[in-house]
Length: 281
Image 1 (tube, rainbow, N blue to C red):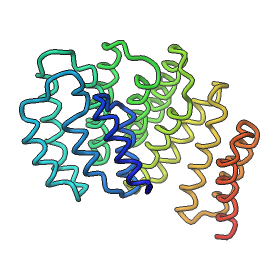
Image 2 (image 1 turned 180 degrees about the horizontal axis):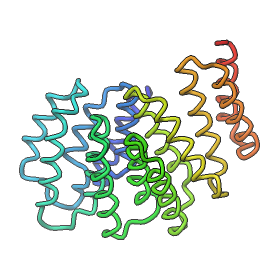
Image 3 (image 1 turned 90 degrees about the vertical axis):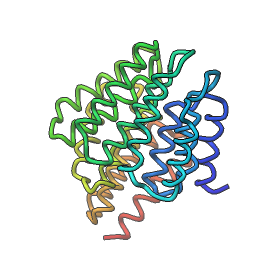
Image 4 (image 1 turned 45 degrees about the horizontal axis):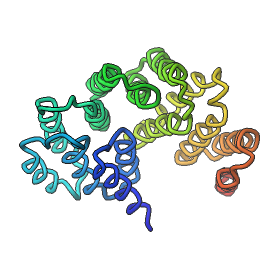
């Protein structure tokens, strides 16, 4: 099965079970970064996210028709008002409390960030975190919007605010006893991917170094830090700086061998990255 099919299948499965949460949003974001077809996933997001046992919005069909028009485009300007309409419909929905509303605002923040509206994106991410907190959601799901907002702070030239946000996200994870460091670091890598796609690789590097600093004092995050170094290597490699790429890839490899000796797949991948950067010199 292709990675595109896996992406769509994962999102559809969550949605049909009435529980398309932040993992679904992350899958969508990653698919967009990789220039994959995401129309089916986007359509599912607008129509089915969080509908579960509650009644779908009255204007769901209208939203469906609009999203179909965008199925083969990445037109954020057109997507934005549709998502806002979905949020409004969700907020006005009767019956069960919209506990998934934070997921909608998370997606809103992602779109605004893609459109270089980082200040507005931070507001959307903060709204997502606030809604999740009010709904007694803890751990990773509460931390994810805060991680994304930290990337926007870097884009706006405020690394101190970004550092505080990253540390807050990690603290929330610890307070909840949630040690899902893989997904937390995946969100950090996703943020840097957005920055690279927007033509801001230097911001991506700045953000990742802030992430390393925030993670460094947390022992349980140590195994995942090597993935951040690998991402730094990828960014340097894309920029044509192969010497620096080799350095970062080697650090990633050393970390993987030290902290994940049983994960032969990731060790092999990091070793391949070292070799490709060396061949590029």
